[in-house]
Image (tube, rainbow, N blue to C red; front, side):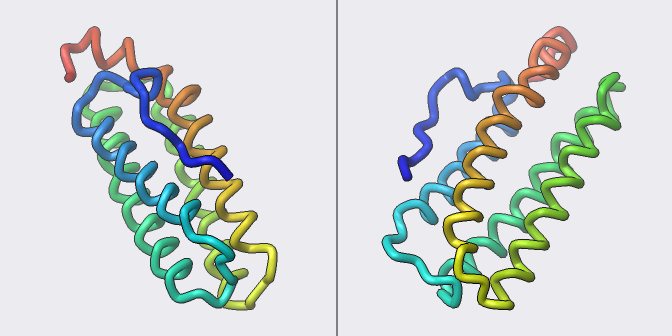
Length: 135
């Protein structure tokens, strides 16, 4: 699987959120770089746990901006974050149950979700926040 390469198409124009997105991409790339990762790998478990914790931190940041600036699609965006959290908890459970296909499933899901979430959902708020002067 190819690594995610950050480029300006991922930028939402808010330094703090862009930095957090870069960190999430770095974590996914760390998983991608692991060759022949096994479901019982402590490294996979550690990275997945760190990524889940960091995603929750990132979601809080985004959601706080949305509340502070009365972003009209806040509820819908928060639902997408909740779906992600539920899915990653399911991955953690599958990892503990040693489901063999988990490394591939995790990578595919995380990579696709992050790219689509940034390029679709997050881009919806880019102009809204930029018009409010948030950078």
